[in-house]
Length: 172
Image (cartoon, rainbow, N blue to C red; front, side):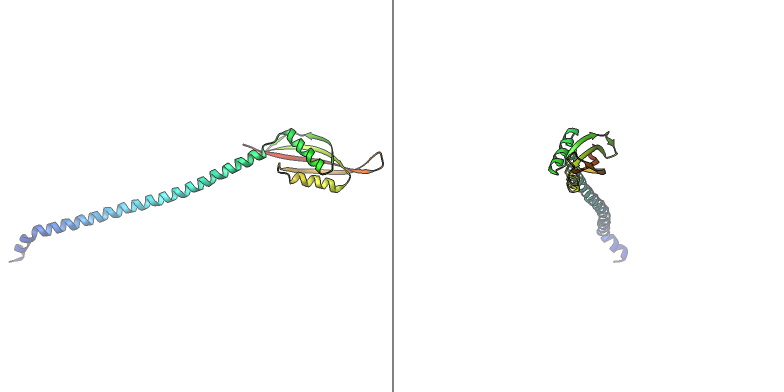
């Protein structure tokens, strides 16, 4: 048998093998293409999962910030004055007057300043008063202070301190 005869005899088998190999080749190419798409989708999913975790953390931080804001903002002018009076009583200083000043609106907070005048027997008591004010959870700060001796009728000398204090409320 010659090569033409062998070819005719095995023509169907050869063509079938070529189609099978061609089919396997095309399937392999389609499979690789689809695997690339699957890997891309998995990478996008991982990226989105990381973003979701970050968003959950931000949400948790926002809730925590809201709690702090509500805690800080839970005051009004009369409660602020009462708090300052209590701190003065604890520090053995006597308040002669408290005068609320106009509020100052900043971008993130509102500052409420007050002029306060106190009388005391010692610098230490005034220092305690200032320290207790500035360490109070309601966030007070002493903006300015001036002290002067004051002669009493009985001859004792007492100190007068004029302070400007302020507290803040966070903007919503």
